[in-house]
View 1 (tube, rainbow, N blue to C red):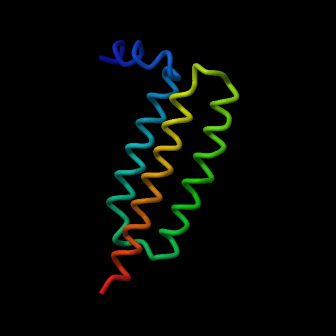
View 2: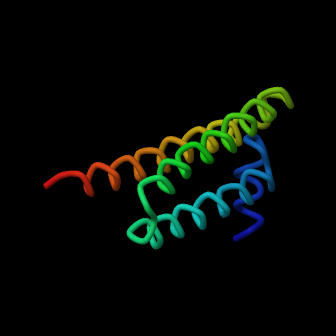
Amino acid sequence: MMQTLSTWSAPYGGETLLLLALLAIASYGLLLFYKPRLSESQLRRCIRLAALVALPLSFVAMEMGSNNIGIAVLSFIWCIVVGITCKNEITRRHTP
């Protein structure tokens, strides 16, 4: 199965893309688990941290060439999903 995934991901970033996808899924799962316990300021900090990780990572991936476009797209999608999740949790807490 790993050989099939490696073959599929080769044009988009290869093994690095697979590793970042695994990290993105794991970090999102942890966010879903811990978001009820986090304060509003910590949720806002998660949004900023996601942007601080995703934007430089996508910039470096785009500078490395078109073979790493999957890494750039994955980091942007991860940043957007984390931001939306945190925003929805903040909004849910303020809604009566």
